[in-house]
Length: 244
Image (tube, rainbow, N blue to C red; front, side, top):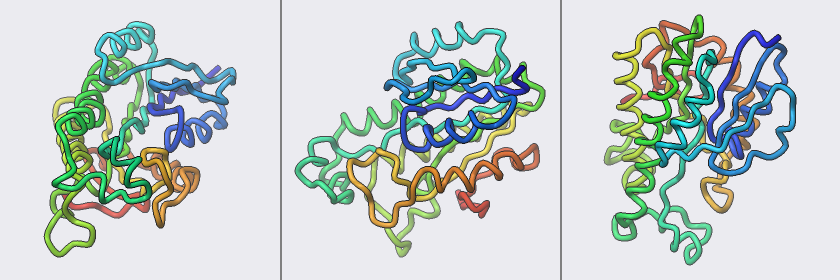
């Protein structure tokens, strides 16, 4: 019999897929894997798969209804998008900066990125609060980004500026989670920057990017160690605090 349930969002690829693989191997663990895309290679007895679109409230409501009375001990939120202007990803292949500049950014990219990275995350967490509250020591770990830090995005800092959709949506995500920390103190909430990871959010491998498996290997132990005193924290994959 499973002794705990772990829900992984964004489980079809990247960090979510790596978290799914890492946790499904742990004894006594039941996995609930969700993504808007099909989840491959997960035909395991301890893995339940659901198609969920974070921009669609009925989709989230259906998940919550299906999981009614199911405690969730650990929720790892990996779903998200990078917020590059889609047309420019083709014409400027390999050049991330060119796909998110002040001049390039458009309303459709901004609103889509906010809808998934911030608004959809809020709706998912709110819908699953009853499940988290059924667990003895519930914990939510959110894959955020150092690019969502306002203090990091300052003149003089390396790579500051630009990235309008991604930076703003991750800053909004951070603010939303901090409100959950205040309003739902019985749940542990931790924001984490997993590093520059090759996740599929960008259509090519970025220079200096590490594999998702490498990032997750280091994070699993930290996730297990984070507790009540860490709730509301924002740190990188090494446990170093990131300024707001």
